[in-house]
Amino acid sequence: MKLLITGGAGFIGSAVVRQAIARGHAVVNLDALTYAACLDNVASVADHSAYAFEEADIRDRAALDRIFAAHAPDAVMHLAAESHVDRSIDGPGDFIETNITGTFNMLEAARAYWMRAGKPAGFRFHHISTDEVFGSLPADPAVQFTETTPYDPRSPYSASKAASDHLVRAWAETYGLPVVLTNCSNNYGPFHFPEKLIPVVILNALAGKPLPIYGDGSNIRDWLYVEDHADALLTVIEKGELGRSYNIGGENERTNLELVKTLCAILDEKRPKDSGSYADQITFVTDRPGHDARYAIDPSRIREELGWRPSVTVEEGLALTVQWYLDNEAWWRPLQARAGVGQRLGTKA
Image (cartoon, rainbow, N blue to C red; front, side, top):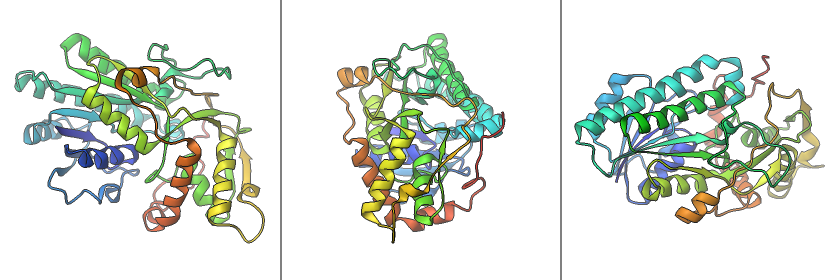
């Protein structure tokens, strides 16, 4: 299968690109190379005969039409998006333009290509989204997001992703475009851009800086190792039912404070400080405006229908992640100089 993967130089997209090549697919990586993208993420497959790269912006319809015509993909995996909640608070316009207008352009370019090709039965448009579109959950562990949970986005980021989800469903209903959708929980792992919680904690800890935790650290997230997520996404594109949505979770709920303390314990073991624990660097900071209390995914559908489950616990995945950052300073060090990295963002309210 030839896959057109948007955002393939980003964190999750690059994991999908690497795994897709390993599974025998051909890949066309379409990426605008914005601040959070890095071609080093796909360096391991860049010279593979089944890999091609196209630098393009999903807001550029003419570029999309050219790429579809030139590469004739069998399927689309649409991951390109602005994704940092704090940045969406400070500058929501980029999120509206990329996540909503960009998805509209992708849908229209895909539909035009699909129709010109005679509506091939095997074609599908896989839209990759987030559990944040569902809003916030109570602390009750029996309550989780399902595929039928009503949408209730709370941030400019999640609102833009909810809008893109609705567009994809509308194009399926109105135009018959063959689509599948997935909504995932919080990802972590290798190549995670160093502005998100887990890489910030790891790199601040190593640098002797404070480890910032929003509010009192009680916010709960379900953590999904990025390599597991990539495996799930490829499983959906290969076997998912058209018109269906699948929630992808790590089955690993932790409070932010628990997560950071786990990271500190792993670092204490792998690279001990001269004295004390990395946990001594934990600092509580002013909470994010509109910070959702809890996300948790019920992954029953993808488990029962497609046979997928995550392969690691959060403790196992975090140990792998910490080791990767310890071993790959040459990757993350230059990224720390990019705009906004290391700064507190998202304080506007």
